[in-house]
Length: 368
Image 1 (tube, rainbow, N blue to C red):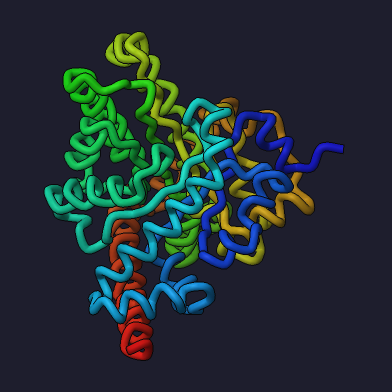
Image 2 (cartoon, rainbow, N blue to C red):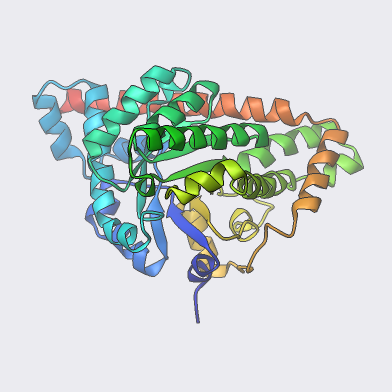
């Protein structure tokens, strides 16, 4: 019998693990999930690294060395995280080769404090790319207004990008436009377009969390009936945007020159509401060319009891639009929700980054 994760992969969804630590790398656990869980990539963020380095497992020797060299916390974080990502890239090198670069990807994020600094983001993206020095690394850039121009310039430099923190359909269209502009520039710069890949990370569960809170406050029968429906509707309509934007004439010319579509990625797919199925944001978001990056708990839930359909997106566009229209009619502002979620998303990563700096600072001081 094929297990549900293998079925998910067979149905066109790339399974990426939303987690990384040196223990996972060095113990062989990361290599094992490629074979046993059909995992074909990894994403990281400041929260993940704060958790991994905060536990300290596997980092003592390097921290002692960095302390002896007099490195600051920021310098140490750069060295530690890029080493983890480079080692993970090596583990996924075979997947990368066998999928022509679509999978076998490991993502590392620019500092969240640069979210509104386009030039700073571009500079650090190039620095991270050079330091990791692996073709299968992806640099994560948030989809803020400042992030959009940075996406274009980093793609133009021939660097693969994972665009993160996308919540609204309009911002997603702007992200795709930024990617296309970057590919145009990369072509003009003489880069091999076939080597440049990108994913656009559309956040799922946080949309339900915020909208459900507002629907509960409204409290009408109509409002309560819409709970836990908005996130899937939003994510499904994002896939429709993907289909529409990459079917346009402006893309056909770039595709003919060897460019790859920017694939939609479903992120924040761990279920936050205990009343919902723990596989909801995976099994209800199945379609070709999709990536789903999931925490290990969600991945194991799908492996254990997920029921994976052939496609749970493309036949639902009308229903999805009706859900978002009904949410608006109930009195919840979509624009207000998605703007808030973007702001909170950046702020949460800054908090995690500061926690990471504090824990590395303490570790460096203890090692001296």
